[in-house]
Length: 529
Image: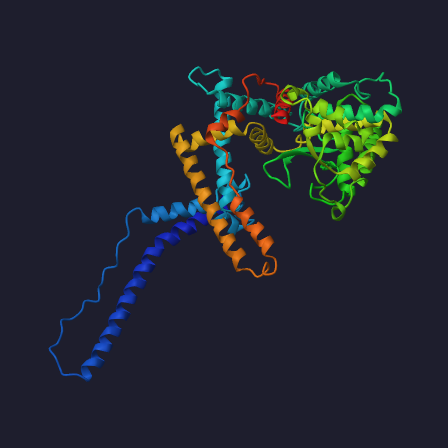
């Protein structure tokens, strides 16, 4: 039925194009004849009111229409063919089938292209994917002719290891083989055992004293934070909201990405809670638990996270506090052992810090949340806290989160991870694909930076005109003057091409064919870089 519809469609299109020439020719001839008739009528009318003149030569009515190029109609037919969306069945949606491909090819629309900007992004993604898959095949075949620079080698190796996790799946069930999943979990559980003893991983785990829950929980949170895990609270390093050039720490409540349906959602619902419980249950089953025990543990973990969620104040009650030193915050909340927490977090860069960094390190903390958290942990069993932190560690590395996605979605996920962990290497590959020569890429970057600086200067000028034109500050000249000073002091900070080498993966870090081991290394490096 589908082939019949297509044949009828293209036969109609071809006949339409062939007949269109004859129709246009007849229309053109009729138009010429009509025009000549009008001219003749006007001429007779003019002659009736003027002096008679000599009879003009007869005008020929057989005007020849302009001829089209030989390839005109074939090109029109090719254009119509290109507009056709081969993915759509014409008998289901004829319009989408005949015209659905006019904006972007379906290969790009499958990658999210729906307008000009998204089409450009999808095309860039497709180019990078084709390059990485081609180099991956060359490396697998040990092609000696394929010589890669270090940045390309690192990116291809990381992408190859990630895709290998995708290709080792069962063609019938679509799920990963048990041995592949076991190897992935073993990579993370071995790392967890190096940190501490865990009740889920050790059936003979002996519970510690409940009075030590705070100390032990703070220590485990700090160890997991070295891998980027945000567990009991979220620790970020970003610009000071009062002084943009100063980098300070922010401590706030977790994002609860697994509990809530979306990060921006204000509350969780029954569906998101059910999905979260099911995810934890499958994790525990992979760790060797029986079904009932895994179900019970999942309920415990989710209920504990719901208690944490209740500690978060509403958005209307959140106030930005003044930055304070680590020493003052630790003295305000001594039970949380924040000095020890930061000592573990910055352990890898401790030699670069001054001895009195606790008196100089600035923190903006959500103190009300930390106080409520302190009171909650005092009444929490250490075993429950350990289970919760273990789940957060595995969820941070997205273990099992992408098993049910399609093959293309998982490859896109690998490309996104490559962009997240190795942006400098991926940018270098992209610029080489676009310009081919390093000098051309550098010239393009320099031109782009100059253009961005010009745009920024124009925006400042327009904002200054608007500030001068407004009457808001008529009675407050001081505020207007300060606003002008801040506006003139604004600068556009752009990455410099000379410093891009610092963003590349250090030569001391070697990636392997184990994607999970690579993630552990890269998270450690990204956390402390």
